[in-house]
Image (cartoon, rainbow, N blue to C red):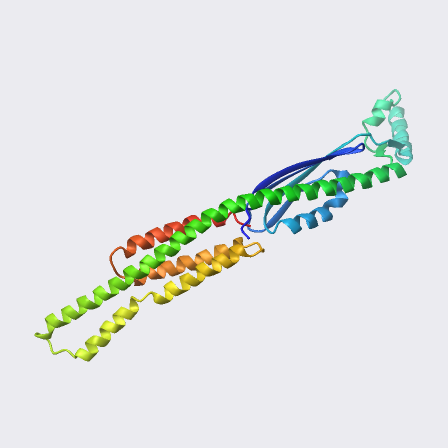
Length: 297
């Protein structure tokens, strides 16, 4: 199946607890490269997110971000570090005794010392229920966004396929025309050789059987029937890959390399009017197809 690697989707899920927004951007890449931006409170979902993405995307760079807005601010706990406080008090007493400092510590002073006070979210049974509900909400949003992304990539893939099918048929027609021109060129070359042999026959004692064999060998060297047959097989294989349910971008890219190799060989072997012109046109279309295939998953 031809599906584009590029796409965009954004979806939000909202209830009385929170609003979860998921945004996904997909770009071209040789392999699956997943970039996540997830709130700390949903960090435990990372493995689930990667599994969800891999079910929908075979390759490409996928940038997935989740934003979370809670309806209720979670409670907090403030804890004073007793051991650090005692050590700090002892150090200040020594400093006062030496006349280095004076006065007492204020609450603001303690807040400016990271080791003195620890502030953390208060976890209650209600908080755990909310966290589980928000995680489920996030999974639902991610799954919905991935489905929307799939729809967009499939729609773009239809446009890609239409363009590639048109170019594939054009290249196939060019190769058939190359085959006809090459056959005409080979026949013309054989006739030129025979004519030249007739001209030299009066001057040289030539072995006509050996000359005939050489003509056959030269004609065989310019025969492109094998390359044309392989190219036709590649065209047939292309259709099979494009119709398959599996991602086919890499396989199509490799197949284009083989098709280009066959056309190059035809160009080096074939002789005849318009062969070079047709070869150049065929290679140009294959290059355009290669550029388009870089967008196929």
